[in-house]
Length: 145
Image (cartoon, rainbow, N blue to C red; front, side, top):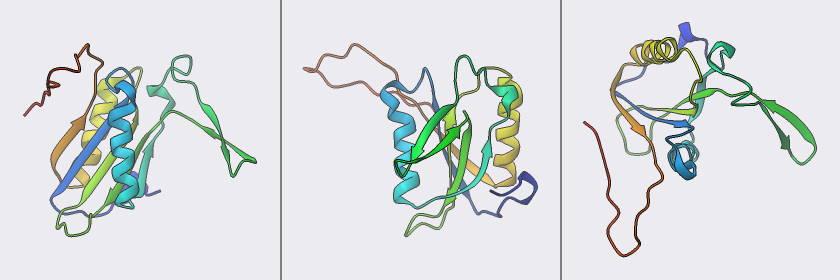
C-alpha cells in the first residue's frame, strides 16, 4: 500500500464509494463497488483501519480462510483502490468498507484530505435501503445531486 504522503497523481478523478452497514441492504452497494474493483482490476493504494474509528463489539474482526488452509485475521477497514477503466480518460478511485462507529467527523476529514490529494472532481456514494415494494409496481429510485 501507498503511504498517505505518496499517493499517485491522478487526473480528473471520480470516487465511487460504499459503506457496509445500515445503508447497504443486502450488501448491494458494497458488492457493486467490489464488482467494479474486480472487473476494472483496481489496485489497492490505501487502507484506513485506524482502531479509533471502530467499536470491535459492533464490527468484530473476522478470520478468513485462504486456500482452505491458511487463516487470516481481517479487521474492519476502508479499502481505497485505483483504476482507469478501458476506454476512459478519467481515473477512478473506489472506496469500500465498514462505516465507522465513532469519530465520523475525523474519518470524513481524512477521506476528504485523501480525495483532495487524488484530485477528485466527482464523488458518487452508493447505498441501498430495505423497503416494502410490491412486485406489481415499478421500484422507486432516489438520487441526490
